Image (tube, rainbow, N blue to C red; front, side, top):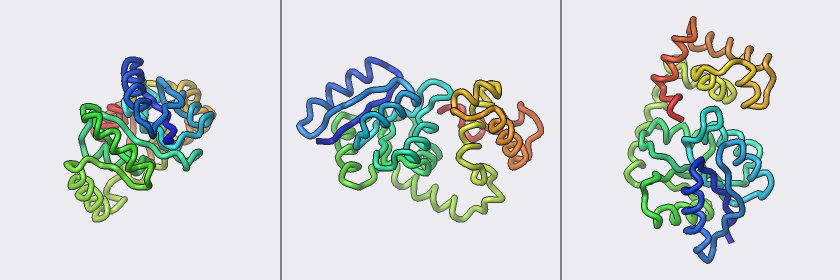
Length: 216
């Protein structure tokens, strides 16, 4: 039996997907979550085989941020991302953060079930139409120096903090959302500004928009 935790901020989506998955003879939804923080809690509690994670959940608790945390602390749980975005940048960063697969929300039920079984079997699931884009993105990243692309030199923690700061959260709010100290937020903000050669919050917001970091 494949134990599954389902994270999506829409109750009707959680209910609908749960019915589909529980109807399968080899699947069981053991827990659900409405945001990234709840997803982390459910994974820690139930230790599922697979976490199905909506990418676009409430600001500061997004699937992308939660994916990195969960994969780091619970590496045995495989993560399948659900999203409306079919951009290769999203795909690249999702896989980079530790996800094992990527399914568009408008995909048929059969594709979701196939993705779950593929990941559970040790594989990686990517929609065939996106495979070419993924290869192209990896080639581009491999041939581009890190010094030429500032985004690639940011640490995981800095990548968590940057979009929250760009969205207007204060140091204390960012610290509470990421369960870190205010001093850690301040130190990482300074590193972000230095690494990206930014001088003000407007420049940081513009950079985050360009990198599509505010869409998560």
